[in-house]
Image (cartoon, rainbow, N blue to C red; front, side):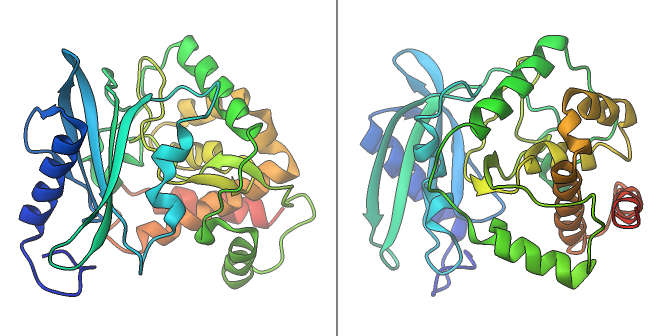
Length: 289
């Protein structure tokens, strides 16, 4: 069943139905039945478009449990410039009538031929490195360029959970007063779910654009750094070198926030990769300076 619908249905069949409908409306042929995400709201997979492989993504809008910005994230990201990501080729939107009216979007994107650094079906949806990845110099340059281009992009997109007010409440509740050299900066445009399971290698690309908007400057790179600490210290060190702003007061603030979000996520399931200790130690170091 799908948890967020007000009636009990066969969730897999329902997602398959909207996937087929999205393909029909876009006039393309899916290469398989698609794969559902953990949210029970998104199903995606490869499809044939103009004789080439593309990527079909179909997403329902969970009005009671989702910022609208999440639902329109891929659409809104289509106009971004200077950011390495798939290109939006076509899209359509409709209201699926059964068992209750639900808004649905289907989006066709260019296919990312490279795999993600960590498979999306790994523990934690691929957020945590289990070892040192082989990332070429060009990859690091493209990461830097994409993060900078995104930060310089004006947008009105804001997600409630990542608002300065909510983050300030989280810090107050979890760690209390911060030292003077840990301080927030003006909000910047950030990818708010930047992790090792949604960036590709050896050619750098960010493939998931649900969560992006104005928030803590540097939070995306800070999350990559925090989730590399335990099992990929050399990669963490290179991130620190490539992004020296992580050592500025605003960068330390971003790292505190990334630690808190990471620990919150780990509280929902067993820490199978033993990363919580390293994250807690890093947080303790930041707030006890």
